[in-house]
Length: 229
Image 1 (cartoon, rainbow, N blue to C red):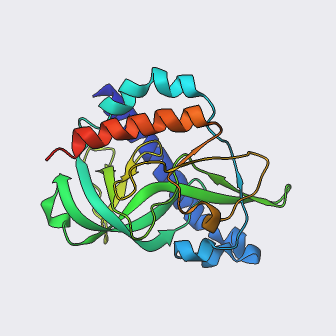
Image 2 (cartoon, helix red, strand yellow; image 1 turned 120 degrees about the vertical axis):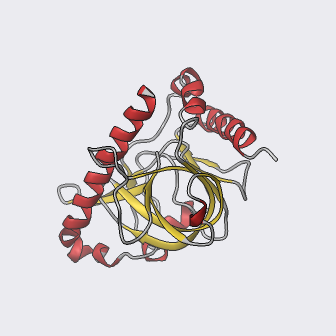
């Protein structure tokens, strides 16, 4: 339960930053970034990574934690991204079509929902660079994902009612591609710029092959656990 509370605290913090990021979208007018309403709008826009995973031992040490953290997850769904995207500075929000609900509110099936915790973009004027903060890639249209997520909870412990369905996930293994299950990682160079279209076929990012390998191992174990027939 302590882990779940910690995850919720992190997620709420991300959500607050994301809301602030939405309010700051006017700062991106000159770059045209305030016009981004779908992932297609990201095409042709170069960006640099804020950081890149290279610590293999970290993932090996905390592998069981990543396996255990979804045991008490309120909502587990299989969904496909629609292409809808809302941009924030710390994280982005993607719209999905819910295909199946493995745990949680069954009324979500067949409807759309917004998932917070996707990569966010920010422009650094002193560097004249756009940077992305991402451990996982955006969810790609035409693919199904296993998504572990939670509704937004108020300080009083009540689900916050919104006009549309909004959930938050985590940026490590919170959404996993089940259409492309293997060989979905790519090794990145922190000094190189990338575009969305260069990376759209990948799921995991890493600075070395060993990091990608251990991420794949954790993904395999999570799919085996939560996609049991």
